[in-house]
Length: 264
Length: 326
Image (cartoon, rainbow over all chains, first blue to last red; front, top):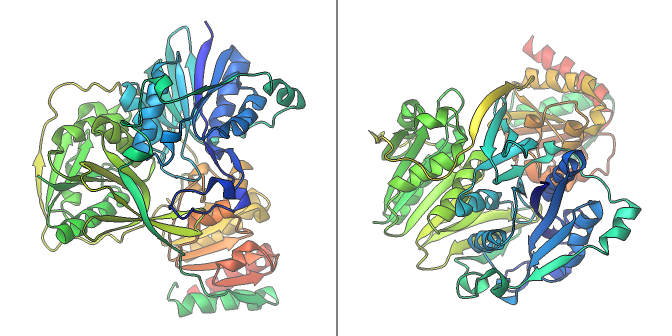
């Protein structure tokens, strides 16, 4: 039986566009910035696709996002994922991370999977706790900071190289399991023209909160227990001193600054 | 009763992680400001050394010897053992690091205790409730967040280097508490440990970091970076481009998908200062960049930009620094 991998893919404002801003309600202004698949999620998607290439696997993208995320998820399908599931509901706008975990856990309970991949964190939230939250909510093993993922379907096990302060810890757990992956999994592939064409035929199932057995009384913006109360612009640094000239003069200028600031 | 709980991490040698001494300091400060108790929790196969160290920052520490931590992934085990001792009957604040282990334990506790979480804090203060600062949008904006009134279990992950560790005037007491019962989360087993080469000076708490980017051109370029770091008593950092090229291990990577550092001196060699790198180092105290391009983005947030060839300037700097040392 082919391995079933669910890859969490969060649409985020494109960090490269650097156009992110908050709306007057202190929520992310999604119209201000083009959306892309979160960079760290592309590494785990690449890992899932490599497993599919090597031993066969059914790769499903899972996102909780506004309806427009269908277009962002399409890129993941063009890379080679087989299908997508988008949990989308007006009540979910303004969800906090605890709600996100509950919603994704409820969606996963309705899906059949052997592995769930989450990215190390998202470029907009930078929390990196959803994978661990899902593992606890679903009572599954958590294999995090993964640099390599080696499932063994016959044995019903997965092996992960976890980045440690001194190298790697090799972790092993029974399937199903949650894996949180890092950039060390390898650079994501670019979608081929064939992949892009094929993606249009692939299915993205949209599910409301009711579809996954939840309601706006349990999760979502109205239940958020955290709120942004203010914002400020970080203090600007004073303009850099520009040093041009021969290398030995430049080196002396550096040393002079180091001495002035008591750094040497 | 209400309380603040610090979930601490240990280094491979059993000592207290630096991020946990920062959390201990923060927990004590918040406890004093809000008038509640602060307690540290150390879950490890042998927690005693780290617990004693944590007690220099906090009035009370619970040490939980957990034999399974010797050969199992720490996050889920620690979360379950910590959840068992945390008294969540009143308003409860749990502090964990925003590093890999802290994230594991915080995410697990969030689900286990049905809490609310704020993540990756750059500062936490108390003013009639938690006031949590986060740096967002690649450092362009700082948001201030809080918890909705009546929220029971509040979890905050705090970035390394957000707080300066300061011991308390009086060390606290350590209570050793054996774990009771089996755990329900199926923590993954550690079946092997692989040492990686070149895991040199850790960049996490380095006072000086000399970092190289694409401009170093290869491993030889990093030898110069290493030489300068050695002369300044610092650690070597790198951009993602340099790590992806295999010139230096991932452990040294600084930026969005690497580490966030805040040294006193950041010397950037051949680093343009792209947003992905900037988010990892922009709060360094002094930033000096050496770059061929006078219009490199790093000029916008460096204290000094030396326009020139990094090898020529770097070698001249080595000569100057050696001359000073005599």
